[in-house]
Image (cartoon, rainbow, N blue to C red; front, side, top):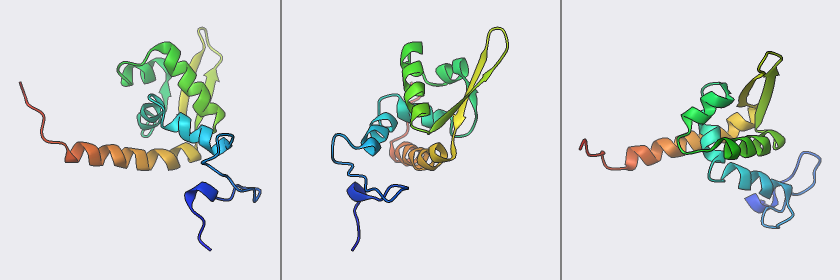
Amino acid sequence: MVVGVQGRQGEAGKRYEVFHTDCPARDVVDHVTSRWGIWVLISLQSNDLRFYELRESIHGISEKMLAQTLRALVQDGLVWRRVEPTTPPQVTYGLTEFGQDLGEPLAELFDRITRGLPPRDAG
């Protein structure tokens, strides 16, 4: 029997029922597809970035929203966080293997969207 996405097996053999509101996989999907989660994953796809570099790469995101989004993605195991013990501390973020796996199809989706759009007017 083929199992759909809503009933995939977890690592320990426990089934994830992603259409149930209490499923932990659903939280990860919510974080990845949130307004800013996608942009963070796309921005980190090719480079590890410090907090302010990441903020500058995503136009329109506030420090507060970036911090909340990063916190959720780190907790989900998609993004890693490294703190350098300097004054002030330097914090760098990058994608885990899981984050890379999810970021690649997102980057492809964005590429397809931009290729499919009509050319922008120069004026």
